[in-house]
Length: 182
Length: 398
Image (tube, rainbow over the protein chains, first blue to last red):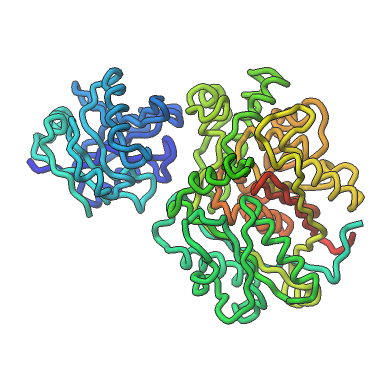
């Protein structure tokens, strides 16, 4: 079935302005089928996982974390947990002020630490032409990286998969999804 | 005695926007208009009542020239006398000082100062780093991303105590920001996170960590200044400007090459010494009820308490450790959350004055300190390492 989702968004469990429940409601109102909470690792509130699991929603809610990795400067990597699958995304490429060679250099190092599955080519949900036109060794993915209500719904993915966590993550790993912008 | 004025001046209106990392919902004139409208409403005035607009921000942080001209629809400056000021991080307090001087001199009866910044629309780091250029003998540095204060405090007081005190300061600022609906960053940090944050927050330079550092914010602030006659006619709660001082010293201009006998960040101390001496204030910690300090990072906020209040030994650390800097403490620092919470640079130092004025009036809302505020202090810092201090009073009685 066709599913609409976003795998990068923030809540009050780190530096977002909406609670996880409020975030879920906003996305659900916009017709999403799945989202991932990906709060920053160094700002995580105690008990964040329980807060995530208490969110009431008809959507599939992935627990995730935005990791801060030091590689000649700080790089952000999303780790998203399925039931058995694990997804890693090299986040917001346009925001590092790096050229393509430098990004590939960081990717090389990151791959020694994690199995990178996708490259996020948006900045706060906006299309960045230079990155949108690039071909990377991993699927290019878009997301909101929303921290506020106004940031929700700018960019999303759509995919044809069974409505369960692992099927969604497998589809992303295979690049079987479409990037969409509002 | 305070420096001589031709006539007394008071703040009669204060306005500010909601501050955020990205005010995508408004353009620059619209954002400024929010603050201007709020200040006019607060003063119960219309734009017709304003004689002069004093407009300021950081030069080129939005990569634009002469914003005062193309902001007129937002500032209301069309057809009015207008002045643009840009003095770096201090610009907000320089706007306040200039407005005070313009009214005190008799040139204008009512002046509105406007500070703004929309940092999402420019390249802040580019603007800052281009200041230094040894090739052209511009051996000066601006910007706040330095780890030397952390190093110094750790050397003096030991690693664990210094790091804890800096993080305590940071958490206090966050707790204050959580009470301020206009603050940009309010994470809801708690004191039981001190150790976690000490270890997990990404390091920027040495022990200066991301969580210690101020934000990049979008926002604007407007403050209306009036002469004594107008202030008494128009305002039930005028906040009087007693004195202000601006200090920049030659030895702080060149910071490449540190020497212990020529510390680089002592303009605060020089400013405080001169200002308090000429106003016969012997114990500033006792005299002032609140201090809105320009604190770009938790390490600096912690360290600078010593300079501003003439503290000895570890007194400044103890103020923080004992939570005396909290709302309700003996010397509340930045009930608004300060610069670490909210930093639209051109507005940041004007916000210190605006927030101090709100405290004096008793109109700060949830972040109003519980005791009566008769004497408030506000500071600005930046540019090529300089300090501005402004004293605000509830009564015209000095």
